[in-house]
Length: 257
Image 1 (cartoon, one colour):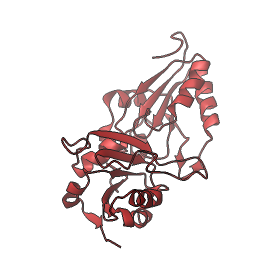
Image 2 (tube, helix red, strand yellow):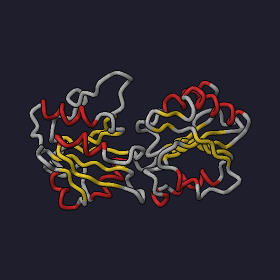
Image 3 (cartoon, one colour):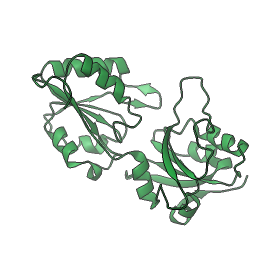
C-alpha cells in the first residue's frame, strides 16, 4: 500500500481480467467484496459486478469506443474525494491495471492527495486470448519476444505498424484496442513486404461467453474486424506463431483477395 497509512480511506486498483469471473485472483475478489464503492470500466466487468454484495455501490466510469461515461479528470477527482471521506474504493479496470489502463494518472492524483492505494494485478487480454486459442505467445524457435502494442492513437494520427514494431514476423505482437488500427495494419505490413495472405489472429471478447476467434489474412483484416460486434473488445495477434493456430480456430477469412 502506497500513501499515508493513517488515512481512513484507500483505493485498490483491481484487475478484472478479460471478463470471466473465474479468472479473478483471490485477492481481487476479497477486495471487491469488502469495498464500499466500486468504480468500474464498461468492458469486462459486468459478470464480476453481479457477484458483489448489494450493499456495494457501483459507479460506471468506463470508456467504450470513444464514448466516455466520465472524463478522466473527473474520475481522478472522484477517487480522491471518496477516499478522503473514508471510503474503501475499488477501482475495477478491465484486464491488468498496469497495461494500457491510464493507471499513472489516477495514481498521481492519489499520491498528490497523500491517499494510500494498492495495485491488484489481473490477467491481461493477450494471455486470455492466447489461452483460448491454444497458442504460445513465445513459441521456442519461432518467436524470440512478445510485445504489447496499443492500436489507439491521438485523434487524427494514423497508426503506423512499422513504427510500432510489428514488421518483424519473429516477434509476436499483440495489438490492443485494435479496431481502428486494423486497416492500417493490413496495408502497412503488406507495404513493408509481408504477403497479403499472411494470417492474423483476431480475438474478440476473450474468455467471455460471446467470444469470437477469427484468423484473417492481412488483405482481409479490415473486413474481418468490421464484421465483428462493434462494442466487443478485441486484440490482434501478429507474427510467425499465428499460422499454426488456423486448425484450432473455428472461423477463417483467409481469402487472397
